[in-house]
Image (cartoon, rainbow, N blue to C red):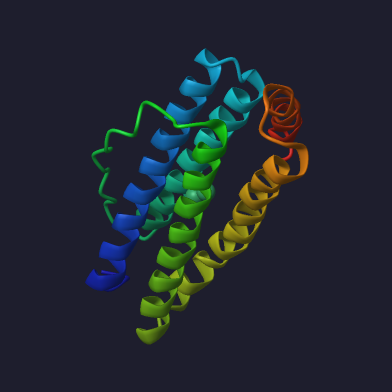
Length: 166
Ligand SMILES: [Fe+2]
Ligand SMILES: [Fe+2]
């Protein structure tokens, strides 16, 4: 096999992490839509698709090495959100955990002189910088604009515009 069992296991785990992230964002989108946050719903739907793309990237990488990727079982995400802000707080935490898990795979790849995987994951390192910044930027809006109904409506409009730039 072209990569070690250890790195393969970590990459398979990462496939599951991306799949679960995609599922979580879809659940948030669904909650946003029924609670009147149409902009946020579009934002999270688009973000769910991005996470699926991340999953597909890793599957494709393994397949190109002639390795069968493990297609994961998806966990049931929470169906109810405490608030729009809380959904973003959880999202940021998830993204920070993803950054750590990417780092962990890179460390393992480097220890094993696996330059292929190391280089492949460079894209994810940069992507995580963008994603953490994105969610931090949105969370800041609650402090800057506010949390009353009018402020949330304003944030929802901002999210509708942000979806196209993510
Ligand atoms: Fe991702
Ligand atoms: Fe992400």
